[in-house]
Image (cartoon, rainbow, N blue to C red; front, side):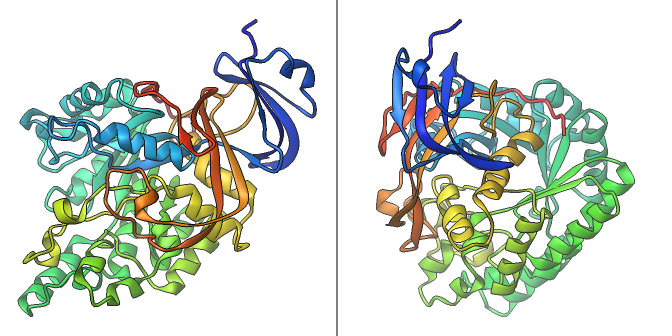
Length: 466
């Protein structure tokens, strides 16, 4: 038997099925025991943590990030964002390989080449565990034909886009959904209707409406709802699962709800920015502030926000993920003289996932702590093939977050650790704070300080079972 590496005593264990006071022991990087009193094991353990007054949560699993790989000019970008994830209580994250942001010409043409290149670029570079979902580009030679190969390589999820100049047309999108399903994978889909959006963007530019705020009005909720309904129809016809990313509106939510009621194997996520912010942000007279929330889909109305919370509570929405994009105002955003359709889409969020979900969700009574660990840890792990992650139970990886549920703080960009230079949540007062984080039983954050190691994070090959 491996020696007991860690005993966490006196905390409140939170699982999707309930919360209870118990001690937790770790051996060989995995949870070995959860019992009311492990004082006997604690006497011989290498490390004993007093978690009195704290919640013991599973490490968060963020399945939607656009972390950027290291380059000669910026060798720490991937590592630093993994550190930021840890500070926020995320112990496993999935990244996209981001075609078009520094990848080689070969990787731009091939999913398989892109996977090989991405894995080489991220090897031994993360502080927490990580995996990859591949982004499919319509410019690739034969992405649908390569899907079975990437599933066999331990990457059973890939993302396709209905919009942008690298989108898949409807025929290839349907083929991609069907092919992934036949080979044990699941396609993720960015749902916005290109006909409606292209026309709205062209019309705005023709009228001289080029400021960042016109980004939002050119991407109406109707365009998302129509596209989501089409993705549901494709999944039904293909008899295959589909996952809808960054769902932002009540109309899109209803499309998913109706399809699921009809037996379609659909899952869906929303993001913290849609749960905490509204389209009132686009009324700011400062174009720089507006550019910070140029994201797709854009922020929606308060009514849409409330519908998303209801969808999380009733199970229509399966999970929350960040869609983290570590853009910087003066580098990637580049708003000076640039029309809104040329501003980089996205905002950072890898460090604030748990903070926003707890404060805006649990602390405000919108859902329970148990539902929070379901949508931030258990469901993403289950749906994305991370079988050892996401739940505090014997035999799972000892990915632990010691969390103070009543601490108060204000989110400030200067206090965050990601590679962006801003946060969309600047000045937001939140309840709850991460104190310590363990990955496979080893401390990465201890009492608010990084004590981890570059390269400790493992790349996780995945197989879908749900």
